[in-house]
Image 1 (spheres, rainbow, N blue to C red):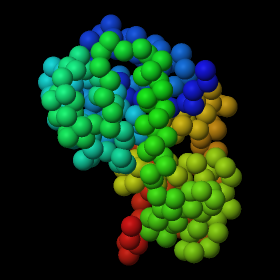
Image 2 (image 1 turned 45 degrees about the vertical axis):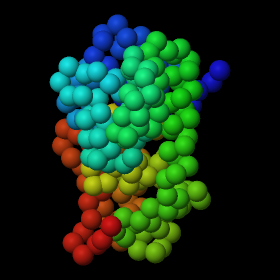
Image 3 (image 1 turned 180 degrees about the horizontal axis):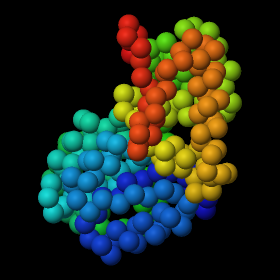
Image 4 (image 1 turned 30 degrees about the vertical axis):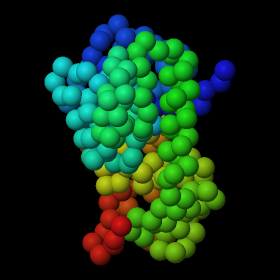
Length: 233
């Protein structure tokens, strides 16, 4: 079975279970980051863009429900949370859903079912996203894959549009270089300067459209959108 590539945050403090999940997701050519603590999970989920967060309910520092609430409140965009736990009582599941979880999977589970649930959550979340995004002078029509700046069309390549869409999704936060590279090319980027070249072309088009400083570089991190004074979200 072929699975669309997704970016997953695995929050699991049990090392054996974490290794099994990450190895399985790697085998699907998905990007899988791992956090063994709630604090690290919150930091990663609010600094990167993930399609799904797999969240163990029992963590050593912060209760999984607290982690879920923090991610839902602070992440750059809504990210589905699939809770993983050995607790199978209805009351436990109810607390998970009331705490913001989007789905619930009881241990032990089939890793193939885990992948199917991740795909379903990511697909549902994508369908619920707005088909038009406006940030300052920039408007993206996601379905038609076209961009306007100050109301005028911007000539973008497919990759340029994808980069701009990812930056819009994360606004006002930055998107890391590694996150952009994996979102664009998975684990097989064309070369080390590919992202730099696409950003140069994208900035050139935005410059021609009257927004020369819309994309800024954050040293040691990545890139983000920066609105000029007087622009509004």
